[in-house]
Length: 317
Ligand code: TYM
Image (cartoon, rainbow, N blue to C red; front, top):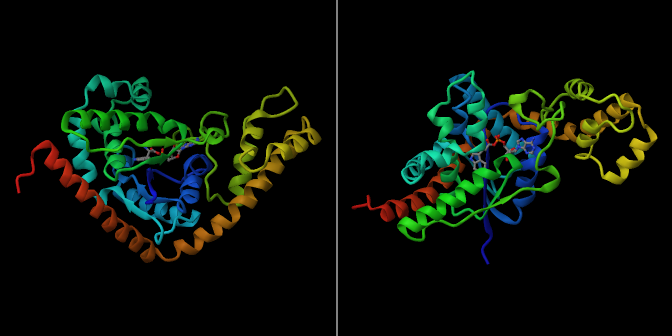
C-alpha cells in the first residue's frame, strides 16, 4: 500500500521558535518515516510581511538550514520553496474565482488584521488562505500537521476542494489537519500564544545567554505556589510526573524553577544548535537541496495543474 501524503510549511519570516517546533516541526520529523512528505518554505506567503529582498533571501536560506538541522532529510522528503513552483499561485487564482469575499472575511487572520486599525490590509493578506489551499491541494495531500492557529486554513482547504469538485467534478482529495492537543498552542514568555509578532518567543536555536534572558523574563504571578507560565513551558521538556515532584520541592521559589527550566531548554537546544552551525557552513549544499526539491515538487504540481486546466476548460492542446 502506498504511503499517505503529507504537506506542511512554514513562512521564512524570521527565526523559528519552540512554538513552531513543538506545534509543527517535531511532527514533520516524526512523520517522515511513515508518510510521503513535502516540506515547503512559504516564501510567497511571507512577502506579506517581508518586503526587503536581502532579508527575504537570508530568511529563506536560514529556514532551509533550520529544516535540515531538525532532521528533515532530502533523501526521504521533498524540501522546496513555494516560489519555485509557479503552479501554487496559478491554482490560487482559480480558487479565487470560486470563492466569495464574505467567506474570506470570516477568516480569523483577516479579522485580527482588520481589528488592527493602524494598517490597511493588503489583498495578499486577505487572499492568504487561497494560496495555502493551493499549496495543500496541488499534491493530493492527505494530512497537514500544523499548530491550532492553522486549523481554520485547513477547513477552508476542505471547503474549497469540495466546492471545486462540485462545480467541475471529482478532482481534489479532502485533507485532514493533524494537531497535537497538548502542543496545539505553545505559550510564549508572556503567557499568550508564542508568536514572532508578539515578541514573546524563545528561538529554537537560541544561544545559552539568550535562553537565560528569555526564561528569566517569563511573566509570573505573585500568588506563590506554581508559576503557571513557567510550568506550561516546562511541560514541553519534562513529563508531568517529574514536574509534580520538582514544583512541589521548589514551591513558591520561582527563581529556582526558572533555573531548572533554563537547564532543560539548554540541554534540548544545544545539540540542535551545534548541528545547525555545521549545516550553515555549507550554503551551497543547502541551496542544492532547495533547488532539487523544487524540481521534484514542480513535476508533481504540473501534472495536477494539467488536470485542473482540463477540468476548467482552458486546456486546448
Ligand atoms: P507559520 O509560519 O506561522 O508557523 C509554522 C507552524 O508553526 C505553528 N505554530 C505554533 N504551534 C503551536 N504553538 C504556537 N505558539 C505556534 N506558533 C506557530 C503553526 O501553526 C504552523 O503549523 N500559513 C502557515 C504556513 C503555510 C502552510 C501551508 C502550512 C503556508 N502554506 C500549507 C501548512 C500547509 C503559517 O503561517 O505558519
